[in-house]
Length: 129
Image 1 (cartoon, helix red, strand yellow):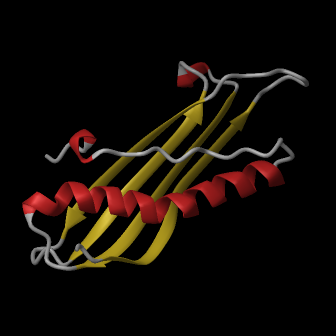
Image 2: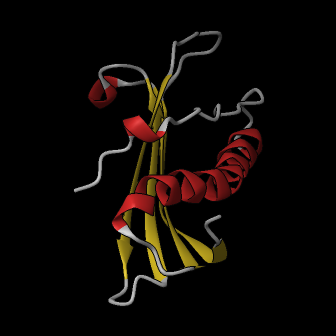
């Protein structure tokens, strides 16, 4: 079993745009991106987690949110065969914090309750470069 421990996370960027008219409704799409980099010994990693919410195309969206986070993890020595599982576990550990940050901000901005949904990730979907 792989051991991955979140030691710390930080929000590195948060952008919010709201130009909705009163009573205007929109259909929002959420996209996620997670990239990991490891130290030389493969015992620590940093996850860069980006979440973008908005209408398509995002450039003309009336309502959009961009959250960029970093997660700092300690882990057992990771082999290349374990990297997909580590990506999924890093996502699973960071997601609740990202969800909370976005939900709290939207509520504090006076908007209706807004929760991003967690995506189930299959190891075959993880691209390791």
